[in-house]
Length: 349
Image (cartoon, rainbow, N blue to C red; front, side):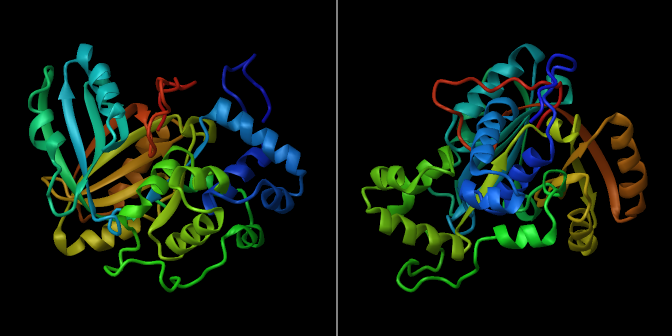
């Protein structure tokens, strides 16, 4: 990573940096030695670049449970608040253990957050039904259940996953395997109460070593390795990568709320999932039934995308655009006693 801070204030990523990020999207726990072999550099170079990316680009690998297999529902909550209280509310939401992807949008007067609740509705919904209405400063609330994700989660935004060629990608993708006998619970979801400590450690750092995972779970390193392999093979566990998207050219970001005829919803959402400008596409409940996250180089590029690509999809009846100013929390929990890392650009995911 070349240091361009003296001239622009923003680090510049080279092909090695981008290759490391792409490799981690393919396998968040890939050893540095394997990444180095694929990139044609030394293991020491990969380790050094990884540390710099963590410090300068907000890079972090997080291990996440598949919501369906964890019997969790996801709600995308939109809060409108007075400008003087919006940032404090966003930080408060970010500190909660049941939230992810907390963003400030619409000029700093709107807060977006994904809230995780039990799928059966038991023991949850405190934030949705109790905490939010009692919070001073909120003037409007809407909650949209995420019914189906077409793009996002284990699927990387293409702006971060375009460096490695097909052969390099093939060498990095973990070998496929069927579910391991005896490793999955009877419900078929693949996650049990015994996995709680393992998942908590991986949410903080998806690259936590097996010795530390063994200490966190009370299992042997061999048991940790078998359980990780089983959960990944079953699709119950995946690894996401957090990074500052401004360093990948996305300095203008927006949430797009669309209304699509139910007859055409699946077709339109599938088409949207193939757009390079989008990092997330999902079907939701509510007045708008499709939501997407757009990342573009500048406002002009966002305008071209909205008018030319989206404009060509006639099944989209309405479109609301909410510019994203800052991401307060990503996919994983906040680091202990650490405030959100400020972005080098005004907009970041």
